[in-house]
Image 1 (tube, rainbow, N blue to C red):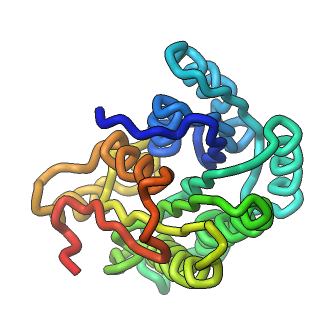
Image 2 (cartoon, rainbow, N blue to C red):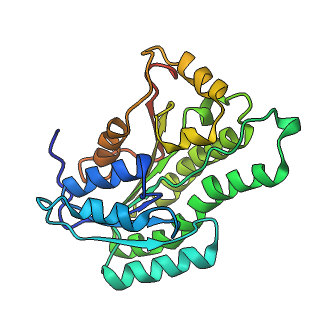
Length: 254
């Protein structure tokens, strides 16, 4: 593992209880960062925090706060608790998301479509909106949005997920330009399918479709995504903002 120095930095990671969010939180913690894990209260958050705490070699602190990122009041509550525990937020990883069911658009239940967009796009907006003013005040910040190659290409039978991730990609580009010159950089990563508990929400046919589109003929590993996120969260990432970093096993070549 390459060494990335995040000592004395505090990182908020949404959806940190499992899957990709847990892998990112673990990698940032191994790099010395203080970790603030946000996730739904019934998501296994306490167990995840305890598991991260077992890494006794890391000097960073860790805390976990329950939050439904699609609810503004819940985000405000988690933000207040975070700032009570830590004096600043240096890094934000907008990772929390859901895939939703697989249906053709004309058969997609509107309540499910809205829920996917509310979590994946509106939720990332609400969290970012809460965190950005503190970063601007401190003159430093790194925001990394976890989007998807589906946001570039559009997956069939996943219009809600694809649309939400396309929105997140373009929110990254807009915010990167808005914050240029403040010391706060904003980037996103667009993985192809990574085998996480998110697969449990998808049909077997959809999982097989995603695998068939990856030239490397395998799914990504959470640790591979976390490695790039760790660099984007560091001071070494100093001349990239509003950018989209592909992690697709060769699927996306543009």
